[in-house]
Amino acid sequence: MPRPHSLLSMLALALLLAGCGKKTAGREEMPPQTVTAAVAARHDVAGALTASGRLLPREEMAVAADLSGFRVSRVLVEEGQRVRAGEVLAVLDDSLLRSQIDQVRATLAQQQVAAEQAVAQAGRVEGLDNQGVLSKEAIETRRFAARTGRAAVAASRAQLNDLLTRQAHLQIRAPAGGVILERTVRPGDTSAAGTAMFRMARDSEIELYAELPESDIGTVAIGDPAEVVLASGRKLAGHVRLIGMRVDPQTGATIARIALPNDPELRQGGFAEARFTRNFSLLAVPEAAVHFDADGASVTLIDGNDRVRNVKVRTGRRAQGLVEIVSGLAEGSRVAVKGSAFVLNGDKVKVAK
Image (cartoon, rainbow, N blue to C red; front, top):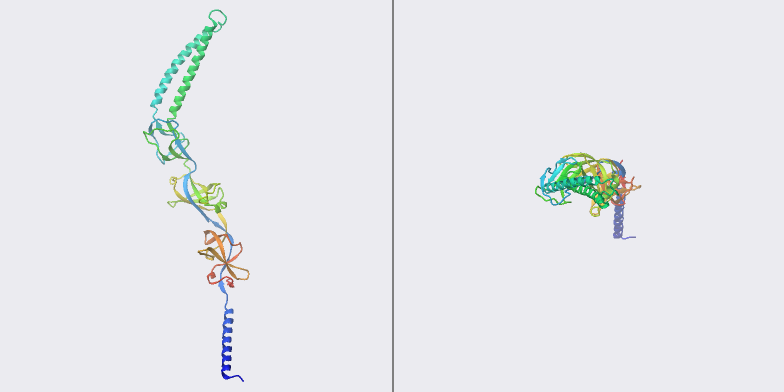
């Protein structure tokens, strides 16, 4: 027969085991965490892509003098002024050339008279060859003098044309219509061939050189509309005119040139932002489904058995309450949105309908 204290020990052990069994059973009976879910799907998002950059001329022209050593007598235009093709921008002093032109004209007049005399003398001996009136040498001398006179006239006339051409080039003209971006010349300066006096924007066209990340190049096409926001807040309608073929090794960006209408507020070097307004198809999930920490972005993936696990993803653009998923998640996957903060990897959840 068991002793009394043995019976008491056995009874206490039985009660303890019963209590543990109730706790274990109670834990297994806890309901799963309720979460809301969303499906990773493609969405057409307008204006999801933005890029910023500087305003630069579509085609910049440098205007320089063709001749060196001439003093600038007048400058006729200022920065910001719009000019026509052929319009005079500056004038160089032509006093030195004028004296040379007068000298050559006087020499040309003398040579023309001498040439006329020589031609007339050569004409008088026509038909006298082998007639015994004049020697053959005398006849050839007159003919040679006529040819020499004509050649001297032609040389002086070419010299005069050269000086007149130089004189015309002392007027610095706009090679095309446009706007003056910069003026670097002053009256009294000495001209130097090849040194720019003015810089112009051809046809006054200013474009936005927007810097696109390499990953976004494929989402933009030539002709796509773009809304350009200036530093003042004004908005201009433009379109993609050109996409660069070179990726900058330092920034990893490619230049997209955004054509803009002529506007006096567009200034070279100004900052602006382009918003590409074409619809973009993005694989995206709601912003609330994406968690960010020191290791990057992640989502809580729900499998077919309603169990969850944490998945690292790479995100892209944001728009309309959505976050683009660049990699790490397949289209059609379910992710937890609300309630995912209270679950651990492997937990079973209840997806709210």
